[in-house]
View (cartoon, rainbow, N blue to C red):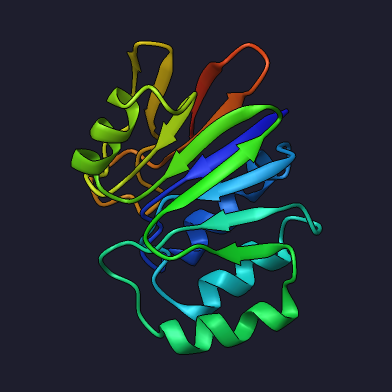
Length: 163
């Protein structure tokens, strides 16, 4: 199974639109926080053709009430709050926004994949048998707009730079 993992979109709808062809290659999508606003939820939820989308909150979410109401239009999108624990293709996956929490989750030995964001820096690290993954930022604040594709069978990560 191929997962598209993204984070820190921060209302950059143009970057999200530019990334959608790569995101569409995946069978499921994980967003590690700082989506920020309802129009971004509409763009992501409407652009994946009904594939599952899992979103955790970051530290810059805007109108949480309206985003929650929008879920009625997108039954394939799940807002998990601050933490998601997922079973995807036989893997135990944890998702949160913060690096410090993610490192502890990876070190716990309970997960095969731990995804996080917040620091806008793409990174991949192996912690025991766990892949600790930050897809980077889609916003473009630091210059590089990236997402990650993760293959659940090979456990390989591919970082995609969005022009």
